[in-house]
Length: 217
Image 1 (cartoon, rainbow, N blue to C red):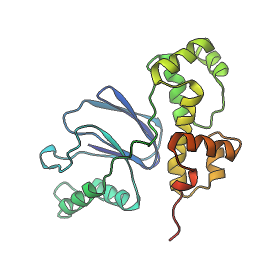
Image 2 (image 1 turned 90 degrees about the vertical axis):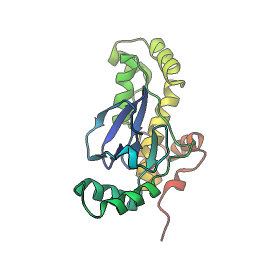
Image 3 (image 1 turned 180 degrees about the vertical axis):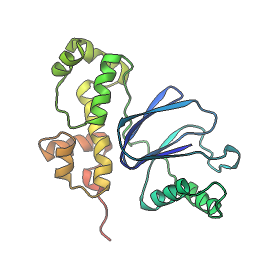
Image 4 (image 1 turned 120 degrees about the vertical axis):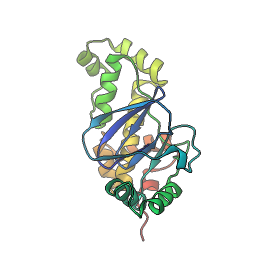
């Protein structure tokens, strides 16, 4: 099964692991794996199922991927046509050729299971520019700062501030890829100063935000 988000923010749970699907990205789920999903921020999305017996992909595990302009058009075409359309075999073959798992350095956001920390996490996934610090969130979910700090570190492997930075950088990547300037992207994901955004981006990805901007033709 292939799921692609053009403007929604989705959360897929596959084999007990959570996968964030921001706009401009997709998730591939091999056949026979239990999965579910939810919408964190409403928008447009596409889900297409394929016959496991005729799928050339040998991916045994779920994989996320970026969706460029050509792949986007092919997915939209496959979604719109009938199962027996004469163009389907060629379109599917090209789609499978273009699907490329994201490299290991790509941002992966682990989500906490505790309902108090989870409520904060889901809010920030949908609204990464929310600047509330942990003390304000603690009041919001009726928990202590110490408890929330412990939960985020134990259930995501990161301190709250580092986890939020991952969310912001993950949200920034499709904006940059779409041509939004570094300064505008920084503001949109909650950074007051572009320099702070650039530093956080480099720490998370090993690259500067400009790496993800469209190249001039």
